[in-house]
Image 1: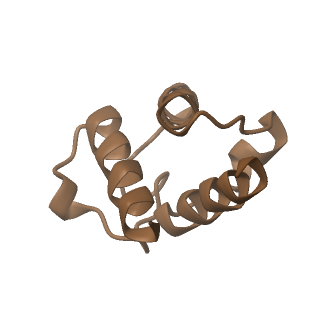
Image 2 (image 1 turned 90 degrees about the vertical axis):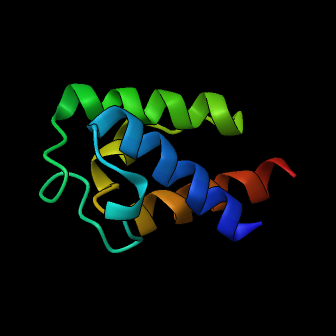
Length: 82
């Protein structure tokens, strides 16, 4: 399960940020390493919400700095749904 969530999130981030998936790791800093601005961050958030059918609170968005943090947040949200 966890690997699928991570892979899907990496895929979404790669797509929005314009990077290859193999350039992105769980430790990748989304803002610094991938040059993601606030507009792209919102786009990534919306894509993640649609993909996993979860709702990420606005105040949680700035806390997502690394890919790993995004994965952990989604897994936490999914565990509440299930």
